[in-house]
Image 1 (cartoon, helix red, strand yellow):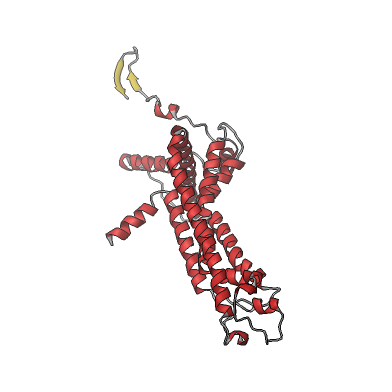
Image 2 (image 1 turned 120 degrees about the horizontal axis):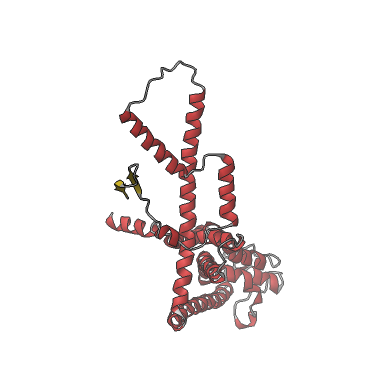
Length: 329
C-alpha cells in the first residue's frame, strides 16, 4: 500500500510525470489490444497485403493521435506558439522542447504496437507470403487446380484443406516469420542505441541552455495551471455574489434597521475585505472579459522585481503642530 502511495505521489507531482504515466498506460493498452485482437487474414491475393498493412499501421496512427490529444505539452505548446507576443517575446527553443517532449511520448504506444506485430509475425506472413519463391520449399500442392499466387495467398490460413498433408505452409510461415522478427529486433536495437547515444552525447552540448529551456517550459505549464485555478476561484466567488444579490433583491420583508455594533462592524469589514481579495477588484462582466482578453493578447513580462520589492505603507498620526504622535508601519 505504501509503494502504491509513492507511485501515485510521483505521478501527481508534475505534468511531466502524469504525461509519462499516461504514455506507459497507452503502451500497455496497445499490447493488450493486440493480444485480444482476432487476426484473420482473408487469404485472397487482392486483400492480403492491404489487410495486414492496415492492421500494422492504422492502430498506431490512432494511438499516436490519442497520445497527442491527451498530452498536456500539446496544449501548452500550441498556446505559446499561437499567442500574440505582447510584452513577452516568444522563445523558439521552448516551443521546440515542448514539441520534442510531446512527440516522444506520443510515439511510445505506436512503436510498441508495431514491434509487437513484427515480433509476432502474423501480419508479415499475411502481407508477404505471396512474395516468397516456392522453389526453395518442398511439398507445394500441385493437384489443387489453383495458380501459384492463390496457393501462396492461402499460406496464412491454417485450416485450408489444400495444406492438410503438406509441410509447405509451415515452412513458408517460418521463413516469413524469421524476416518479420529480424526486422522487429533490428528496430528495437536501433531505438535502444539511439537512446543510449543521445544520453551519452547530451552532456557534450551546452547544458545551461537545456536547463533554461526546461525551466521555462515548466514555468509555462505551471503558469497556465495557476491562471486556470485562479479563474475557477474567481468564478466561484463571482457566482456566489450574484446568487446572494439575487436573493437579497427578491426579499420583500420589512427589515428593522438598527445601528451596527462596533464588534460586528469590524467583523463585517474583514469579511468584505476578504471577499474583495478573492474577487481581485473584478466585479463586472466587462471587466472580466477585458482581463481575459488582456491575458491572451498581452502576457505580463517575466519580471517580478516590483512585487518582490514592494514598498511598505507607513501610517502616522500628527497633532495640529505637525509633531508625530504615533507611527504604524
